Image 1 (cartoon, rainbow, N blue to C red):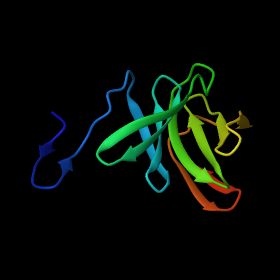
Image 2: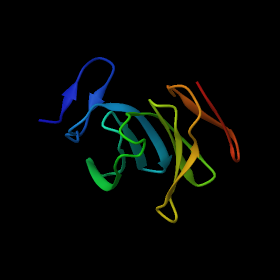
Image 3: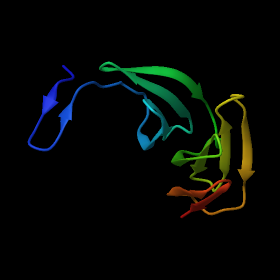
Image 4: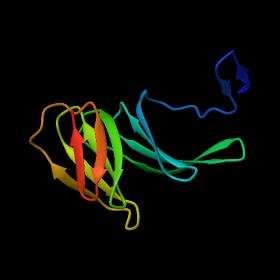
Length: 119
């Protein structure tokens, strides 16, 4: 049963996944992305009490977990355990490597168009 309530939160629905979720990003109204520990990124949509899977990008970081997400310039930027940054173009559904030379990425934040910071 998805209905769980306590004094602070209420759970309306759940989506069972096969790997741990490392980060969530709301990027367009009711659409959000999940950074998965198996290295994938799942695009999902919330619709009237149901979480619907839309698309899954597998092996985004060459076998490393996907740790962090941010949205910038129409792309979801994904940071990986191995230090890679990958941009997923939401319009063209393409992914491109932004950087391979960083340490493990734990956090991402968008600060301006085409500018984001990582830690």
